[in-house]
Structure formats: C-alpha cells, structure tokens
Length: 350
Image 1 (cartoon, rainbow, N blue to C red):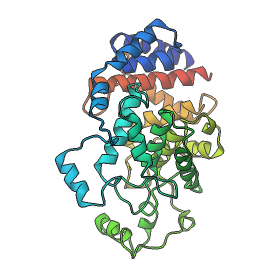
Image 2 (image 1 turned 135 degrees about the vertical axis):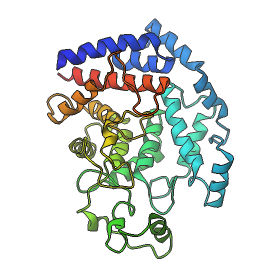
Image 3 (image 1 turned 90 degrees about the vertical axis):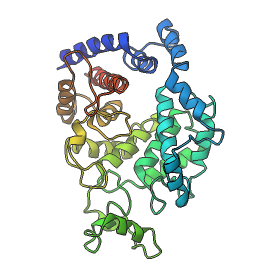
Image 4 (image 1 turned 180 degrees about the vertical axis):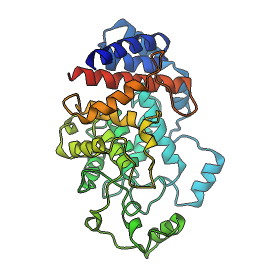
C-alpha cells in the first residue's frame, strides 16, 4: 500500500498545486512539499494570501470589539436571551477565527487580537468558556475549537489558554473520551429519557436542575465527536502530543472509527465518518484521520489500515477528493489538501 499512497500523494499534490487558491497552496507547500521560508514559490504564495479576497473580507468586517456582524434575526434572538457568549455572535467568532487561520492571517492583523480578547474574556473561573448554545452547562466541543484557534494564533503562553486546556483535560471520562455534561449523561436517566429536549433543557436551566456526579454515568460511552474536538484543540500544543490523556482520547476515537455515535444529540449516524466535509470543525472521518496521523498513528497500528484504504477509495479519477454534499470548488480544494497531507504523514511513518 505504501507505493500506492506515495503515488497518490505525488499525483494529487501536483494537480492541486496547479489550480489551488493561495491559502490551499500555502498549506500544500508547507505540509506536503516541506518548503522552507526561503522558498520563492512559498514566499510568493504568502503574498497572494495577504490579498486573497475572502481573507480581506473577514479582516475588514471584524469590528474593534472583536466581533463580526450577524444577521438581524440572529441578533434579535441573541438579545432575547442572556446575550454573548450565548448566541450567534460567539459561533461566528469561532468559525471566522478558524478560517482566518486557514487563510494564514496573524494575530496582530486588524482586530484579530481583539477577537481573542473578547472570547477569552468570557472565560469563567472553572476555566471553560460558556455557550454558545446554553450557559446551563459547558460544551467541550466548542471549548476544543476555542482552544484550537487560540493555539494556532500563538496564544500558547496565555494563562487563560492554559486554564482552558487544564479544564478540558479535567473533563476526560473513564473511557478516554469526552461528552457534553448533563445532555449526554443525565439525559439517559429513566425519568428524563422520554422527555422532549425542549423540556429537558428548561429543567437543566432552572433552579431545580438534577444533581450531577459524572461517576454515576460510567456505563454511558463518551461522545465520539466531542472527543475529536478536544483532541483537535490539544494537538496544536506540541507538548500535548504524547500526553497520556490525549493518546487515550485518540484511542477511544480510533476504536470508534466508522461506528455509530452513542448520542443522538451530536452527529449520531455512522455516515458522518464517510461524508467528506469542510470546514474541519464538522465531525468526519477525514478530520479524525488527519488528527490521528498528526499524533503519529501509522502503519504499525492495524486499526488505521481500514481508514486509510477508505480515504484512498474516496479519491476521484481526476486525483481530487470532493465534498459529499453540495459540491463546492473551494471546499473541494481544502478537502483534497487535507486528504493529501494526511496520506503523506501516514506514508512517512513506514
């Protein structure tokens, strides 16, 4: 299989390089072709990234307070609640921070730093950032994304980011994974399992919320996609790559590859593994395989072979990978770059 993988990487990388948008080309040159900072093609690509219209739009629309505008309806809905970080403002910030990272933006451009100051300013004493869907309980997969974005933009030494990391690690469950507290354990009590979600949320958000001891729910498996989000955040800190907690989470994810998520509240269908999606905060087999390869899961781990063969099978005859739902030319390029870099890392471990 090694020969097939290396041929695939070489052919697809060459084809993608010819047609790719500047930021995709940057990551292809950096991650796959290993070009250093003095390479003239890489230098030119970075210049082109700086004037890439979607990147300029995100920077120009980012306000001084660190937020992006949201639609009138979203704003009205947010104002009827407790306000940010509960609501669409925070969701938009997380997604746009990720895209600015993809577009090779830096923290001191425009109001990017203000966006992180705003987000980290919402951190509570326990270490997590509430929201964006509720303040009744913390949501690890959003906090994992917040951690990922913060580390990508160079905030590794910020004590607030360290506190966020420590909180996430403290939430790891007995099987090595993570879940959403209350929503993915208390929900399964006999007295609540048939309750409508709307009514259950009202109960949890009220003063009469049920008591909660995570140790009482050891029989309930963790959530595959919450686990992926936490690990995806942690790997941006090189010191975390070999931490036992991270590798336990990766093993939980690897053992669950292609399997149905236990929880209906977050991407339950097993089809999510084989659906090619972008951006990477959307749980999928490709995003999981990328993180596992970064962590060093290679040919010596027999569990990886089936996943890698699936990824090879998803490649089209023209050498590209395509978004499974509603094909999008730009998203197809990102998906192809992630597939190529994942296969390249895997091949390098032979």
